[in-house]
Image (cartoon, rainbow, N blue to C red; front, top):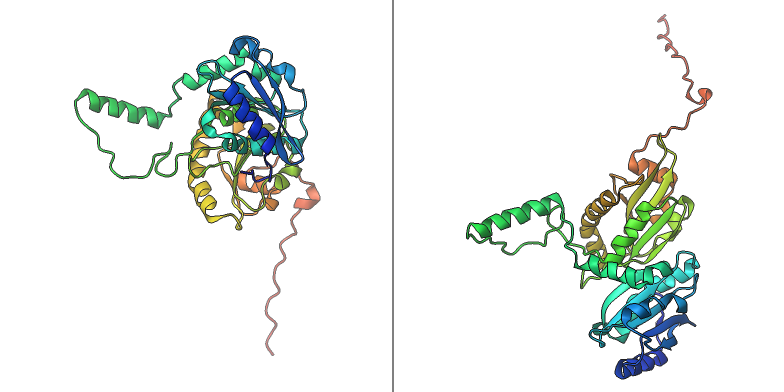
Length: 350
């Protein structure tokens, strides 16, 4: 199985992973992308418990080079944790390759082996303490919107009264009504939270990010990106969602805005166009809740940016779509109006 990038698992990696699964004497299996192929890049035996070994995981990683690391769990030892390490200061091409290929890795080696995954952008994200927080976050109840809380209260009241509610055959509920309910994996939510709490101009891209089978978002790319490079950073032939952090000075006072962009080129496959179109409102509503919970100086733009041609996205396009009013002063001669000229009367008849 190969990713949209064309990168596939090598026979060598398939053989090595099969051996370490059977032998159970490997804690870490490091994997790299070389020559357009996923290859093993070293295996490391357990030296203690999972927590003790996780604290040593950073030692086998480089500060600016992405890598995958498969980690054997302690209980049960047949379960594996997939670590996707893509540091912030890595090359943009490497970021895109490793972000777009991670699903190929786990699916090709057998998804049933992997019971958990972590997306890390720095070594500090890979300690035992960080992983414990990750597990706590997964176990915690998900926050509900006001509408979801209201529906939960109604159903609870029905149960207390001994009644039974009937849902019938209907469309799956989103946060704002009927449509497609898009699931948010933890790594996507964390990426949005990181984007909101940042300071610079940054792009978070979810291209081919919805799996039609699971209807779940997937992170494709998170990188620094200015307004001039935004148009060329979005896919030209397939739909995508993107969150763009824009420190703009158009308004007064200047503000760092988080824009939600839904791009759907006319050449996109029909099934993806339908899925992305029906899910965009749900994704935007969920993003509003995440941005609100993070707080800070950045705010999510109230309007969704939609386009069928990513090349048209520039600063003037965003200003127009968002209805922003420029604070840039205009030279007096540019606004000077000509005096009204009285029209000539009809000529005198002879």
